[in-house]
Image 1 (tube, rainbow, N blue to C red):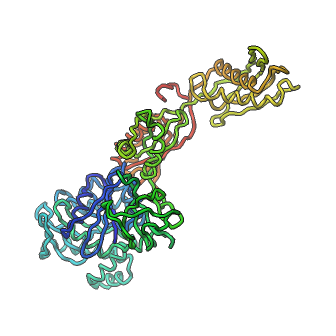
Image 2: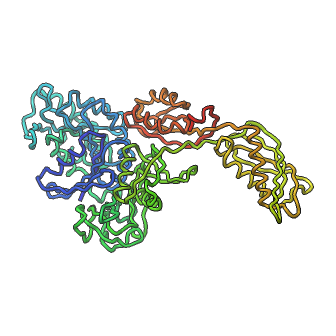
Image 3: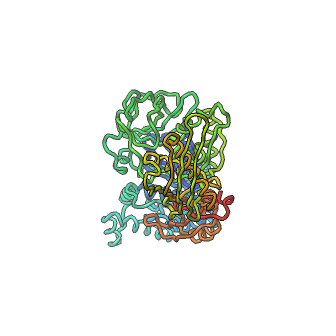
Length: 635
């Protein structure tokens, strides 16, 4: 069995394309939907078994592309027939280039296009360092595309609604355009084949079989991206695409070599889901013999394997075949599996950093204990979901790829695990710091019968440079404060820093214990801890504190055409532009760097998606804290 992934922007017709390919021979295909609306369809074509993985478009589903590509032999990038929409394909071309995946480009819905195919390819080429070459040119009657001319076989095919195309004579009006396009194709392929290059130099006409052989090699080595066209909804150009996949896409055995997998890798775990009455299931593809129920994989035995209908038991998998694991909770998706363990997917296959963050709590008190366990299980299935604990509130914090992804996570928690949750925005982690130094004397005295509490301390406080944190020192002379009580004073000061006068943690403060007194009976660690705590609290109240807001260092990955627009966007979010430069390896991309208040992070996610048509993403990390004059706005 060979497998290919169909990816591309939203509304480009990917699902329709998969349905059309699977229905070419009229046989009933089998389709299974997995988490995130990703689906796998298995079918037969000309006696060969095939699997097509259909990944929804849009930023919310992008995390599923990497695991899908890692389990496939080839990819079909389905793009709209509009030059202006080429930038929407930029993120998909980028991951295909990083993965080195053999790729066919399919321009869909050409029946409704008004521009030129060459203009679409030219715009797409901006985001691809490898040559995107036309394998077909459109055949027109007036402004309408009525067929396509194959540039290798030099045959013309006329489209028919819902039926296979028919072979027709090459129109005289298309002869010069076909010759020019074929010459461009041959020159592109000749860069990777010396024999073909010699023939072109000597004005020899290479045979079609020879050109097909060179084209196949160039595709499998990801030297070029061949471009086909058609309309999936009308059944046009579908057969040509499927035949190209059949003749040129590599066999399953090539996947191991392309990804540099060791010989002990038995299977690729692609995607997963939690299904009612079954539990956790993982879609695995065998990369060699030995994948069968009871076999040891990832350090434990597989409980069972089923076909995509989730009912038919599978006795064993041949190389390249897919199945679902059941009763095998030890197997996680997005990994390569060996008998004893697993290895991570390549860096290019990993999800982008989460763009939205939410605190989640159980809507019903009875589900509080189930929430953390359910989220952990779901995070194992969903490569785009992260789970952590917010340090300020202690609540669980989730990171998701977007608003649509957030809704899907909440729905899955309720559907699969029976946990209804409520979400709220993560509060900004504000801090406080003192403005000036002060010396403070504080005496802690308490008598309630029996041994009392007594501790007397004198402390000096001073502001420290940003990022220093907290320092404690002592210069006590003559044993005024016994050495064994000094650590308790430090602990008390740290207690006071947990919440300053404005209610936020205090940072960048230096405390020096200079003097004090003790009592032989009433002094204790607890008494000196209380003295240190209240001494520092009173000192901070007297000198006053400034509220600090966290400033993030943000790195945005954005198509170059949008980079200039981000200057105004960042300024509008009260950020500071640090600059931008061309990405060192991704063609047509810029890396835009800025400093931004943490309170603006979510607004950045929304504004960036709107400004770049959903193509850009960013990573962020804490850079420093700076004073804010409007703590409410910063929060």
